[in-house]
Structures are given as structure tokens and as C-alpha cells.
Length: 278
Ligand SMILES: [Zn+2]
Image (cartoon, rainbow, N blue to C red; front, side, top):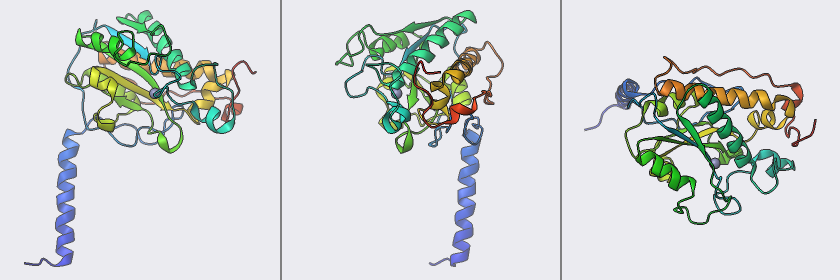
């Protein structure tokens, strides 16, 4: 039996609307549209999860810098747009720029979090290169043990520039139900599908990954320029810590709206300034 073409289209669109409405009923809190003025594009893949499991206010939170144990080997992180495509000097010799910023943000988040009374600590693996991911000193091993003991393990990342990068967002650990911390971070930064790339090594082991943003404009020049760097790092740090506080129930609501950052005009130059330049 054939159905007139026009009627088929109407039925198809009604079915699609029904699916959309059903999905909307389950959908996580919407992320504000458009790119964030500081961190740029949010992950375009969207998220397919909601963090509902509540966590205790004194839950131990372990923060780590992505790629801190994998320099000079595959998985060392992005060098960023400025170094790779625009000839800028690396922020620090011997490590990729992503690790430089991961470390900067991770340390600041822990310091501010402790000042705010969170039960939060930092782990930095002693060597910058550990070949075996399951070596007990890696982020993966330490984060996995922390999560298995009931803590919350969080690894800070910046995403790749250009078409390889997705944008800011949370890729939650999936060794247990998604939590209110996963949720508040996703409200602030956006979210990825939980099985992104088939389930990443970190989330598989119990470590939630937070992509702050792509290491390109507008974020990278704001970080690289010494005149806007401090403000940019403070804004990112505040956003993460506020989300962690909300996630453990210390605030009613995380700041979903982006915090404005004053970026000097010169920061909009594509490369920004190299470290130490003024
Ligand atoms: Zn990374």
C-alpha cells in the first residue's frame, strides 16, 4: 500500500516531533547557545547523559593535569594553534602548551577550592614521561584508585585547535552513575557524549575529563598575552571551582552564564605574545 507522498512527509514530521519531545523531556539542562567569549566553542556533539547522583559536601576531589605523564610520547596533548601554525615559541621548553595550561589551571583550581573549603587536592606525577599507562604513578592509576575509594577524580584538558578539536565540555567518568558534580561542570562548560571515541581511557577508569576550550582564538591569545593572562586564568578557575561547589551542594546554582573577561585589544592578535614578552 502506498501512501501519498505529502501525507508521508506530514507523518514523518509528526513522528520526528514526537521523538524530539520525548528527548526534550529527558534532556539535560541546555547549554547557552553560541560560543563563550573566553573559552570559545562548546562541544558541538551534545551530551546524552544527566548527572543526578548526589555526592557528599566533603567528597575528596582529586584534580590532575591532562598529559602530565605523557610528554614526548603519543598522547602528549596539543601544542596549540600559536605554536603549531603561527610559529610562536612554546610556553615552556620540553612540554606541550596544553600541559602548561592544564597544570596552571589545575593548580589554581586546587588552591582556590581549598580556600573555599572544598576537600580538594592536586596530583602531579613525578616524571613527565611514563610509558606504561598502568604504572602506579600515572594520572590514570592514581585517579582510578581515588575514584574506586569513593572520591571524585577530575582531569583538566584544553582541546585541539581547528577541525580536530570539539570544544569545551565534560566527558564524565562512567564507573558509577553520573553525579551532580558531572552535571554542574557540564552546565558551566557543556558536555560530550559519555561514550566519546568509544569511551576514553580516563572516564573508563573513573576519571572525569574537563575540556576547558580549544587551544586557539579566542582562548589561546587571552592566555598567552601577559596583559590578559591573569584575568583569563582567574575566570576559568572561578568557573571550575563554582561548579565544583555547586556539585557538592554548597551552592544552589552554578554560574551557567559566562563570566566576562576583559581582553586587551592586543590579545586579539592571532598569536598573542610569547612568555615573558610585554
Ligand atoms: Zn588533552
